[in-house]
Image (cartoon, rainbow, N blue to C red; front, side):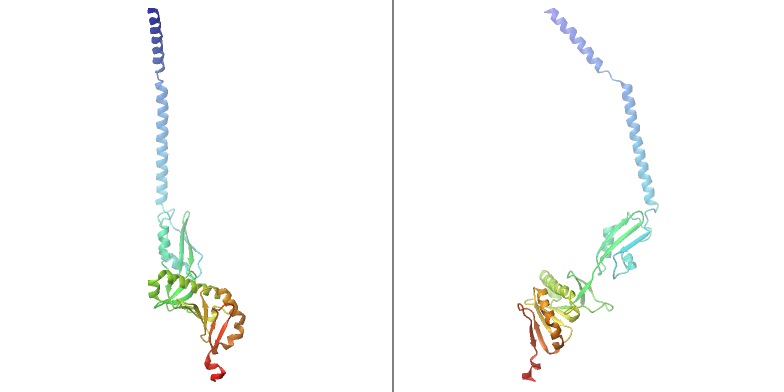
Length: 281
């Protein structure tokens, strides 16, 4: 038993000796590795700091100052007008410009539906304009233009054109009290304007007024003789097709007509004013 214990002790001593040997470190190698890491980190910091400093110097130098403002997609408006409304000045740093805010400024112009502003490096700003197109006029106490999306967008001034159909039957009070219904009726009126714009026989040139009857029908008024044309609220194309087939024959008779009704299936009802009938002559 004593011999076994002594053998175990010797083995334990040898084992501890090996563990001690394993714990020895190559401090010189560790020092060199750490030094390389520190030097690399410092170099990276210096390079990054230098890059940031160089970028800041370039940023502040005027290299990115606005030199050109390009306005695209203009039809009615003038480029100088848009530039003035953008409030962009030559030399402004393109990175410091709030492009969304500039777009909103330009969109305050009633003729501008949308203004998209972008940067072209290093010194150019591009403004893409979507203009509104007047398609009709509505009387809301003042005369306003209406565009193809049924948006009321501009009060008319003395220099604005008046040769558009006038939408009646929708007043300011009704629009304020019933905005959704008013919008729907206005869209119906503009749908009729769109259908008339596609035609050559009975077209917008023959119509002076598009009246919106809130309960029954859209009523067109002919430019010549002011004859009312009952159109209803659907099937505009088919109804106008029927009218166009006979319109060349009745156009000369407009001054003696009391009305035309298209709101009857497959028919065009032409009403003659009684004062022009034989019995009353």
